[in-house]
Length: 386
Image (cartoon, rainbow, N blue to C red):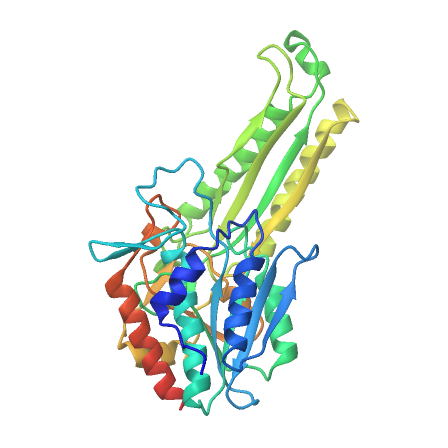
């Protein structure tokens, strides 16, 4: 019989694949697919457009609806410029911690999910158990929607999904949604002494950024809804964290590029915020082109993350609370793929080992105790499905 690897052995294999979002994840997918096949589990792929990456999904147990999905992403953020004290692509155990890129976010949960799927096959679960491993989560959760669609087309619809982002094994039933744009403002260069005859891309971009600042002030000032009040901050936020442009201090800028992001509380629509931004862009474009027809504002929408809305008597939350004993209310301001599962009609909750504060950091780590708690959770889940 093929050896069933421990969660730690699987984690060691997963971390060894440098699946930074800008690169391929196929060597990791190949390994997982081969390992599952060695235990009689057929995995399926959803490819990206150029077939450089793939999401992976699989099913064990009876081919019937009502199962449980374990959801994780395979990509990690870069280590470039970070000061690591050990090899980021090797799991290093010291002082009760497992160091390595992705141990916390979120290959620790991926390893536990792969282990649980193989155990579920061996133990003969009577309720279906599925796994969904995505790509491009770190660049905007773009790999999740087509993966979910492929999974639902291949298998009977699951009842609930557990998205294993680091939550200290607490049941997170709500998070903000999000959307992001890459903005390219194209101006027209003239000497700055002739300012009215040109269009400064930087100064025009500043109008859009000021629009965002004004919306932030309005959002902070208005009363928070009951759901929004659970969050810190208790409102939708708009943010620009990167900007570049210009040629010289005495030339109106020909180009300005920046990123605009929205973090939207449940109860408000990311799409409504995007439409409001695009309407503001349209007004600015018209004003710019009245001076120079060549001027323009180009938008590239590069991520969309639906909010995770707390569910009244949600089946996913109920299961996780029963298995963990956690009865407190937890929400987070970052986004996850849980919103996509919920939007697809699947009850969803976030619950996984680790602390989000360790994600993306140099010397990223997962507490060994958290990893063990994750395995104990999977043992309880398997017992519940048998």
